[in-house]
Length: 80
Image 1 (tube, rainbow, N blue to C red):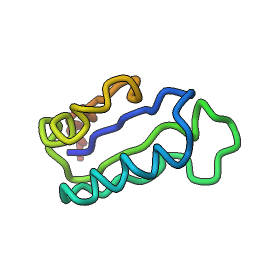
Image 2 (cartoon, rainbow, N blue to C red):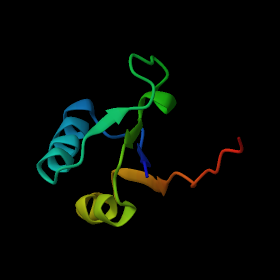
Image 3 (cartoon, rainbow, N blue to C red):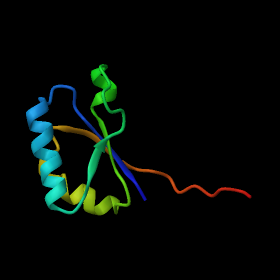
Image 4 (cartoon, rainbow, N blue to C red):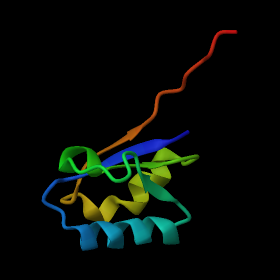
């Protein structure tokens, strides 16, 4: 399952990198959902693939003022 989270737009780039490093140390690889995006609203959205939503929430627990939301991607069933 993947988890998406969004930084508040007021969070500076260096602070975002610090938080992403915290996720990395917790074994969670966060990446930008829209790499290279110039629009700050889209550039602030990140995803963590193959992650437990509770693990992502736990790793981000101390950063509530900097994170706008954390959402697990819905499970999808493909029809064949």
